[in-house]
Length: 144
Image (cartoon, rainbow, N blue to C red):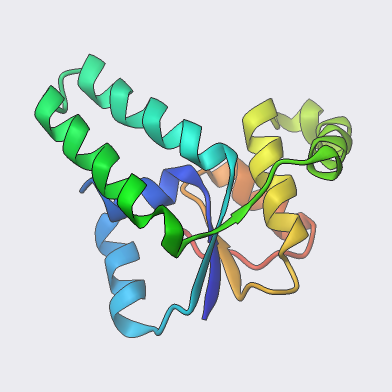
């Protein structure tokens, strides 16, 4: 099985929070052969971890451990590079869905998932709005 994970789902592989058990179950019950992530996920992951530090959910030692674990695992992911095509398509997606709430980084995630839509079985995101947009473009989803 090949999947696309946005940051909201990928982080659950490293930090237990609501929805982690669903993702764990997916990995236990299926053979995942490839995990696609957008290049922007790397930055969003760091930001999300540091937000957990700022809000008191993590200590600095935990932050360092989580970042080191993600960095060590990075070679296991198929990273979709942010190029001109992704940026251009994300702009088109904002023109189409911006009025419904699509924002910049989600548009980049969306455009990244769209580029691998033929290769993946489904995309996983905890963002209900992003899931709605993915479905409307014919990308199968599984709530993370």
